[in-house]
Image 1 (spheres, rainbow, N blue to C red):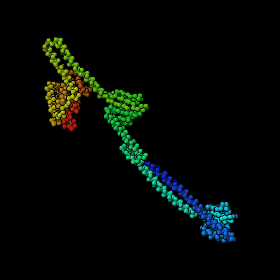
Image 2: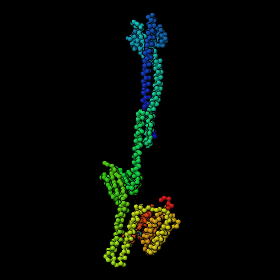
Image 3: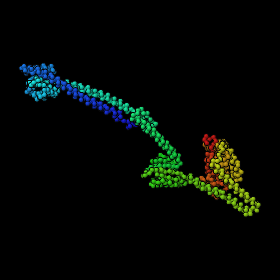
Image 4: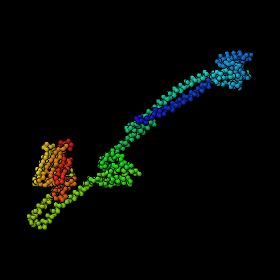
Length: 598
Ligand code: ADP
């Protein structure tokens, strides 16, 4: 009995409820028997004594009557009475038919009043024998009086009365009562012990079952009891075992369902909030906490309006509560152009206003949509320009230029240039889509950073010199190798260096840098060129994006995009820092080949 309050108090347990009636029954029966028996014994004693006294009275009466007939005087009758009194151990009184006392053993006869109307005398005269038991005020205790007419046969001449005190009988009855009381007590105690033993045996399996039930209640759903009997308790035990097996299965199913559900909620990208009838937040998944910039402890139990803190979201939720209908509304959040879809669904029917609110962050999707639109318009533009100039050159040739060989050659060279530009665009596009789709697997291996940078610098040095730029390298000699596909990383670095040379006016500086940082190598290309405006900076890695809106500089706008994909395929990051008019630094990270994790 582990829980306070569930244990029955000592005397309210089943054991006592079974035993107490038995004990009471035994006590009552024994007490009744004692009362009945002592009454019967007393009656028996009195009847016996009365019979004995009547017999003795007849004998003594005959003797005293004979003496009276022989003319004996009162005093000698008293004398005789005293003798018989000694013999019979009783008080002897001879009463005449008129009630006068003729002879008396114990009292002064002359002082005694008329005895004619004593109950026993009247009964003796009327029916041959009279008896009476009463308290003698003269002696101070109970006496039994028995009177008979004498002589026994024929007309009576007097009445003989014997009297004995009842103290002996009363003492015997008292002894009997004491014995009966002791027997009653003993029988009650024995009956009680027997009843307790029987009750204990009956209660033991109930107690065992209770202990098992208690374990189940405390959460041990595997607790079982082996039925030992085939009676009602056996049936109860079997039923209990079945019930707890079912309970365990149900709890198991429920908890695995719940953990599945909470797993789904936990890892969902969409935010989920459940509010109750009063509009208080009852559930909030991590995504919702992140989107609403709060946490479970702060949000649970607070009103949705306090937690959501955005009037449009609160309006959608309110509308769902009031109309009891699903609401799905796109909402623009904050100044950064974040874009959410808010879906509020009523959770229960009727009057209950519980609601399920789902917050979907569509910012990224929307951004990608914009990028895709820009991409299509850019690629059309990119292809249309060389195609239009090709068309113009072909028409010029056909309209007569073909007949002027020097002009025709110049036009053909221009056409060759346009076709090269088109081919490069298409090749870069193909390259990009190959990297993006993962069709070009990386051939990873330890690559020396200094070696790689030197290679790229050497290749582009003539170009830099032509543009009148100083090309420098700042790389620690002891740098650990990176784990990379050398050819691809060279391509990425070439793209960056190419841009730096292209966007830096003559007389500027371009520096290639490398350093270790944690378990990564950071490679950078720094220039003192035209720089990039802050609003363009976040978008320059997009395909076809050009900070130069007029697109007057050559190039496809794909170089940075290709570099970004190469770096990301290596598990690295790429970023740009720039101040317009002062220069730019493009950097990317690569994992070191000794890095423990890759
Ligand atoms: P492009 O073929 O036009 O060079 P990129 O993807 O390599 O294409 O570059 C995208 C745009 O980023 C360029 O058009 C230019 O506006 C800007 N840009 C890239 N590198 C630099 C740099 N070092 N200095 C200034 N602007 C740059």
